[in-house]
Amino acid sequence: MSNGKSIKLFLADGSPGGIITAEIMNWTGHVLAAPRSRLADLLQRPEATRPGLYVLLGEKLDGDEPLAYIGETESIAERLTQHARPEDKGGKDFWNRAFVITSKDANLTKGHLRFVESRLISIAQAANRITLANSKGMQTEYGMLPEADQADMLYFIEQIKLVLPVLGLDLLRAVAAVTQGEWGTSGNPSPLFMLSAPKLGITAQANEVDGEFVVRKGSKAKASWTEAKWNEGYRKLHQQLQEHGVLVPGVDSLLYFASDYAFASPSAASAVILGRSDNGRKSWKLADSQQSYGEWQAEALANVLPAN
Image 1 (cartoon, rainbow, N blue to C red):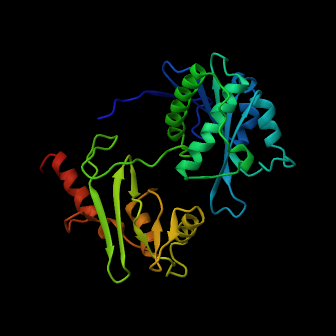
Image 2 (image 1 turned 30 degrees about the horizontal axis):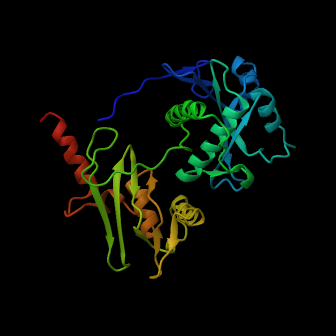
Image 3 (image 1 turned 90 degrees about the vertical axis):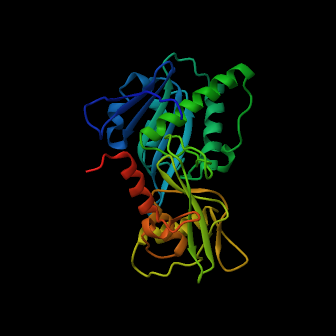
């Protein structure tokens, strides 16, 4: 079982929709999250005068898919002001929320920032959860930093990866690699679930890990979406996973998961795999059993709740 971790969140103006700060005890870093509509207030905070890193989060122009940009700057206020202008030459007018990462001891140099920025871009690409708006030229890792400084910055990055999901940003969150019989980070067993559609030639495997339903690499999925108008969101997700290289063509007219992929629910996973709406709580079965995901979950609850 993993050790617990304390993260201090503060609603700067008493509103969950306003500016939120996040800190971890004994970590020099400081994270701010704010909607674009509160940018003027964010820029008046002392953190905005410091060098730091930032993540801009928004949507593609068609609104179908989230889009993010990772950057570093020696002045948060100047850079975010630039990105807030409609005529921003960098094409960053898509964003509606900003996450700002600074250091309370003001010891982040330009070299530190470039190192962390390049690593965050690499981590986000590997996680493959949100498309990056960063140009191809920015995606080479920066290595010109002394060994001791690199070690400090790698620790700094680990804390960033911990804090951002708490603030609702999963950009850097890697898909957990848990197999049957191992234990998830929550301390609960993560059994193997199977989805089978013999007429379609489809078989898939998944684990529930860290609050997500993770379909495993090598699982098969239908190549086309069969419903014309229902579950438009899942149809778009089916297409997006192909565009991102998660679902790739196989030799049998099916698609294959080229990597593990975390879905928000078993129904989202089964819908994408079967190419239609589906109740994943019924269709996913415990490996070597006919017990459904829903039945397994109900049994787990019954084991911990007192009898009536």
